Image (cartoon, rainbow, N blue to C red; front, top):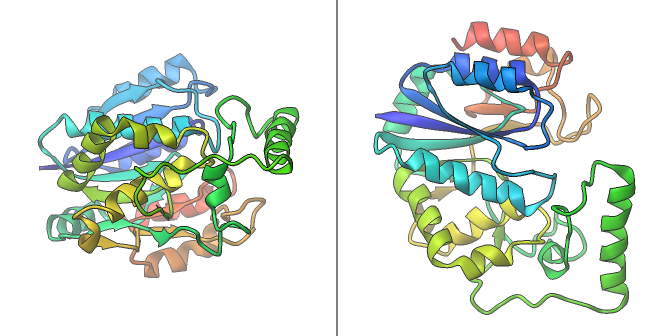
Length: 291
């Protein structure tokens, strides 16, 4: 029996190598890399040389906030489910790193009947004036324009402004069940993840309604699973250590060696966010302490 690590990434080739090297052959790695990535073909070929890497894909161009990120996650899930030996699945980003021993992964997930997915009902007070409903209620064109390029960011904001100005609103179809949101990252059992993948194929109207939704991956799994028979098994602790303060030039915070003690005390299995050179010392400490 194996566990699958699903990774969505766009840079930091060497960090991806470190994630792969951390795990043994009781794990399989499935990676989607943004088609826009500057990771070279030679580097992709080197990643493919690791025996536990079963997929390297650049199927989608993934802009921050866009629907293609959700599509890449569902695609990775579908590919990982093809191996019947994979019984637990962990979605992480290319900025994450494991903070438990491999033996802890094996013992914990072999003996749990829970699904680890952060969730809350939408509207949610922490998601702006509309509680997150604006994310679905307007055309958010993050797949067409790149928020990280200033003039394209202005286009996204201007289009949103004019929709609100003229009183335009996208209706939520009656087919969509009660809305939930939460963190993108999760650890799910085979039965649970298979339910989402099958649901996505059978009910394409609901899946496709999340197109033009800002950060649709922060809605979709929560909404599908919290309206399913898996609801009673879902634990809102997704086992990820994230510092949501603005530190080291980023929010969530880029982790550094001052975070090491908190990581050791955490019950989380992954931490984020790692950037270099700031995170080099803490990553090296993790490799020694948790190996």
